[in-house]
Length: 484
Figure 1 (tube, rainbow, N blue to C red):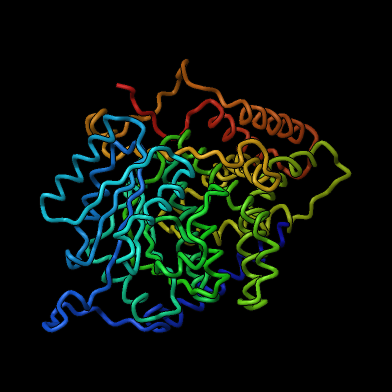
Figure 2: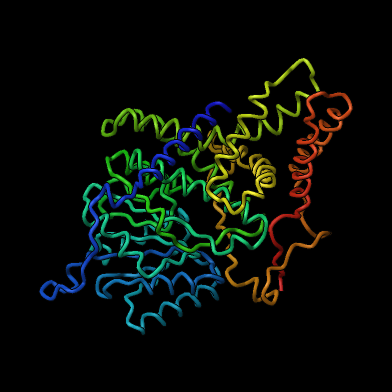
């Protein structure tokens, strides 16, 4: 499994170097001409009709940011509809969102405030319900932004031409830019992981196969492509990836714009991050279980593309990457110090992991000095991702658990007078994470044994990794948000 992951990383590294050397840009491979707004005869009718959807759920801290950014998009006012899909259960927040929508409506913005009786299907259900309104039939494209996303005003002028001038393109995806990456060490770690995803994985998928996983936000869909693929489905917790795979199987191509960035927020509390990672790991594994045979039987895409989707996109990145990180580096390798007869070759224990790590770090050069800390933190999180992956593959109890990622917006500045309040060193009322503490104890014992009787000096790694598990286990990671 380590070799599979190694080959995948090297392959993507080679492709991305090739793309950078030859200056690959989507504008060179697809038609793209700026839309002109000075045609007197046609007027604004020359512009396609665009729907902008903003799904939200109790987003007290960020609802104004997302609605304001959407209403600030440059586009003819009679050719755009802003649709706020509010699933909030808190009546106070719901009223605040409605008042905000009304405020923009009085300014002349065509904004619709939509609610529904229940939260069936969560985000997918809200988006699906939003597409049923009669005015949506007038629209050609739909842009989707989560409640913490703030697109630049020229976003539609950058993305819509790819769809309008290339009938085979079904999706245009922008890159995420993190406004709170420097909030704490945990957000820096997240930035390192996600930058690799956006700078390498998405770029490689778009350039080589015109396919990548829709990120659920900061993207524009051709509505006919969305409908042909079967629309939104809530059968997994990754409705965005589900739609992307189904649309790809229908022959639609995707375009990724790495130089178009949309501001967003990283989860800065460990609780929020853990729930997010459960959803992002469980969902793809469950979708793989549901769609593997459908992908194999599909006759509209090439065998090479099927191989890429099943093996590279799903199996290696969404399953192997999580499982091998935890089982090998946190279970099997430590156990070898207790059984001297078992010897792991250095290329498997040192060289391959080192190369994989260096390749992963290329996306965020500014955080290269945090590489060791990132490795230790990722190994801790791999335990949760492995557990979630197994739940998804076997459709166990929490397979469809959906917890909305908490957004803090300016709440921290408001409560702490300008700086995020760091979590205190000792919190008696803080929740202990017993799984992390248990694995940390196991690694510490293995380290002690290796220090006393071993010859490979694994104890250096084992003590560091045990310390990382202990730190997370006592809740000293992320930030602490005061309750008042």
